[in-house]
Image 1 (cartoon, each protein chain N blue to C red):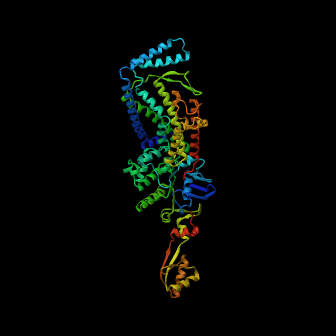
Image 2 (cartoon, helix red, strand yellow):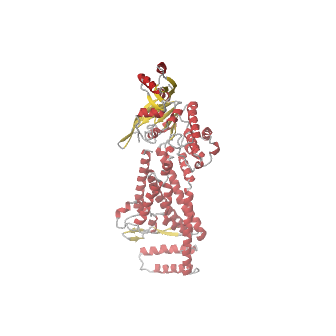
Image 3 (cartoon, chains in turn brown, cyan):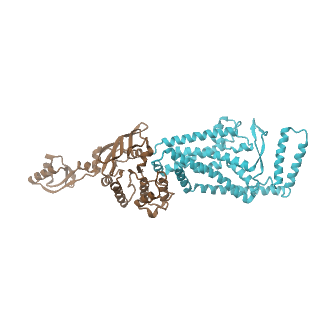
Length: 303
Length: 326
């Protein structure tokens, strides 16, 4: 197993008497994109703000590359790059001055590194313009450039595609994958969009109500939940036969949904055909994380 | 640390606040210079231009005659000698005592602006030093760098000290050069009376002596700088505690204005002398102006202000280091 770069253990946060983060634990490994998925108000942003040292946890520990965020703040932060919510840079400074500002806060980051990250995010043309003249996508890229200045091992991105247009989202997604695969960064991406996580992440933690409900690879979480969709003629007889073996569900438009497993699907198919039911259509269906999410959280909404 | 201070100055300059302040000062100085010029003109019309030397000469001769009398008390004699010395200086250097040069104008301007105008200018910069980072959201980037929070706030505070010094220096220089265009630049060495103390409602003049104007100006500027620093530090604290710049400015503005109003009506409420805003007119002590509350002295005022300064600094750092950023 590759190296653990970020380790969160039993993280809790109380505000007043209300516990809003109830013991979150997870780990990030080198070179992976880790999704942090949950509805609004699930505690994603609070957790992320604790990771980057903006909020002090009530208890629990956070280690970045082995350094405790609480006890060795400056050392831990050397390995971390982050954008919390939107990259709020100084609009009255040029892109270059913004980078210079943050480079001055880092040991041994000079012009060469600044030029490198500017090239990486493709902002060479506009870098000396004031940030207030930038589009949102350009600000996002400048934010990433800023986060990469210290050559971090862990990159934390809170809702990185918020407010971007579809082209910008695709571009951002490719960029994040590239960082993880080519530079070995661990990237933590939070999102309330399931499709986003599905396309971008290797592993995912599903959060709701201040707790991690499930952690796993995106594919394994999906495999467990795979379904089969049938279209049968005659419909009612087919339904009857299937219900001998499993619990088929009506999916509307003459479709029937059952669980899916290779051996079983073949056997049921044979049974149906032998009983004079024509199988017009049979599909494997990957669940959208939306359904998975509803299933895992029991449909509860946390506001 | 120098890097961080550089950052803060870069942001300060990019916001162009200091430039705005310089323009405000220049406009006000222009206004006051014009007003002063008008009043000098009317005075000149009343008195005539040619005879101020003659009348000054006459005053000196009168004083000399009175000094000749043996029935004068020692104290009174000393006083007369001092004022004669002052008049002689004006005569020798061809300065009309009722027509100020630039140094006198600067002195008056600085003294009159020490308890409200300069604190207001300082407020413009200090009150958004921290809260603007919250308003922009850039605080999230600032505090997730490998730099301790205390260091970040310290760099901001150092930048603030530099900015306050720049404002005081700027006010002095702008008023000197602008008013000098009209009034001329002479009078830097003119003798000024100082050393008054007010005790039990009486002006005690036993310590009175003459100081050359440039020395007096430096003392004035020192005191004004001190007052400006106290106000700046308090606004800085408010800026840490209150996330909205407008609210922070409002709070400090209310405090300053209430100080100016209270100063006229608190003479019987003696514990008010521990309020910082009552103690802002330090330059008054140099000129022997009665303080708003009896028993206040330059030393007591400075001590009260120092206590507020230290407390504000402590609260600002304590809150900034501990606060969760949502």
